[in-house]
Length: 189
Image (cartoon, rainbow, N blue to C red; front, side, top):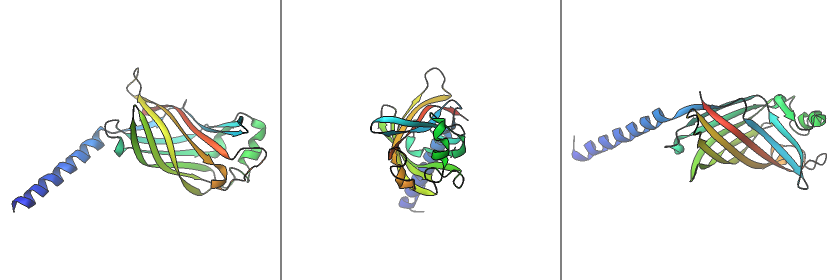
């Protein structure tokens, strides 16, 4: 074996070791039951309706020392939606908006965590709603909880257009822009 081949072997083994160490330090997290995962829709600057998904399946692999290796997935049960205006439930879950009878879940799958400094991250991923998948960037703060090291405080938001996911535009006075929000905590699984 020549010296170049030996150096390559050592470098490959070192890179593999670093990758394994990064994965060992990463932990699996899930959102606490108290975490708010929902949205609000405004029209002419006023909040028309707020919704919270009561049933959310979540998973995040995260090591604050290696955020580039992180990943997150959410599965939202559309029929578990509770609304600030229950009288709008049939309209919001109906065919023109969520179409919950046909599309029972919405999902988010991350592709990249970008550390922006001071517990601030840009999480790029895909949101699938009504069978349509679009790229979304979640503006996110993830901070280790000082009182409990098994918790990470989270605040995350993104704005999407309803019509991008096949929902009717200007329907019933409901605005086009939807603010998606996650606020609460991730806990070690």
